[in-house]
Length: 358
Image 1 (cartoon, rainbow, N blue to C red):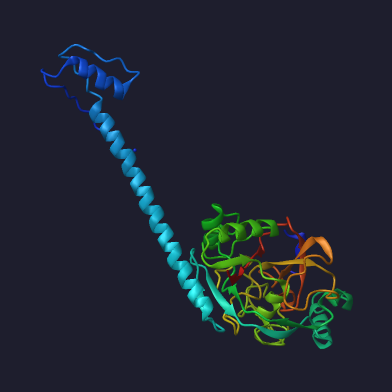
Image 2: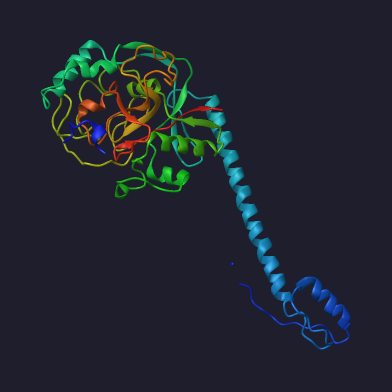
C-alpha cells in the first residue's frame, strides 16, 4: 500500500633444447649454468646438454618484462586519461554558469547549480493543501505531521556547486564499489542503484574522491537538495502544484491534485521523465535520495547558509528527500522530509552526488 510510511519497507612458453659447442670448456659450462640455475644439478661432462633450460628462462624473462610493460603502459594511459579529465573539469569549473554540464572519470554527468537564495520549507497554504490531498486516501492525517517542514525560512547559498544530473546508477556504483546491491537489477545498468545506506554512500564518495578528477564529492546538504529541486520555483513540485505519473515515477494511483495514472512498481531508467529548470532529473520520485544532514524535527537552530546540519537533532537519523516509486505523490513534494537510520537500506533508497572544485 503506497501510503504506508516508507520506514516500513523495506601466462606458456615453448621449451627448446640447446647445447654448447664441443670446444667450450666444461668447467665454464658448469660454472655459468650453476650461476643461472642453482639449485638444479648440472651435468659437467663436455657433451652434456647443460643449457636446456636457458631458452625457457629467456622466454620467462621476456614474458615477465612484457607483462610489466603492458601494466606500465596501461597505468600510464590511465593516469594520462585521469589527468585530461581533471584538466577538463577544472577548466569547466572555472567558467561554469547555470546549466553547465561536465562529465567525470566514470562518465557521471554533473550540472552546475548557481548560488542564490530561496525559502526552505512549507508555507501554511501548502500545508493546508497537502493535508487535504493526503486525507483523500488516508482520512486521519493531522497538521502535526507537517511540523518538520516548518518554519519556512530563508537560505542563502553563496557558492555554486555541482550536482548529479541523475541519481547514481547501478553501473556507476559497480565501477566504484565493485558490486551492485540493487534489488531491481533487471531494470538495467542505468537505473538508480538502490539498497544503499547512508554509510554505504560515504564509502562511495570516499572512493570516488580517490579518482582525483578535480572535484570533491559528497552527498548534497538538505538545503542544497531542496534548492536544486525547486530550481527557482515556490510550488509544491518543480513543475507546478500538481503531480501525476506522467511527470515522475511514483504510485500513480495516488496523484497529487491530479488524475490517476500508471504504477510500474519499481525504479525506472534515470532520465525517463522531464527535468527541472536546472536540468536535473528525477528530483521527484524514482528513489529516495540521502542527504548529508542529521534529522531534526523542525528547522529551529539549523544552518541558514546551505551547509549541513551535523550536530542538532536525532544523531542516529539522516534526512532523505524526493519520494520514490513506492510512494504517493504527496511524499514527492519538494519540501517533504523523510528520515532513516544511517545503516538502513531499502529498494527505494538511492543517492545523488554533489561536488565542488578542489
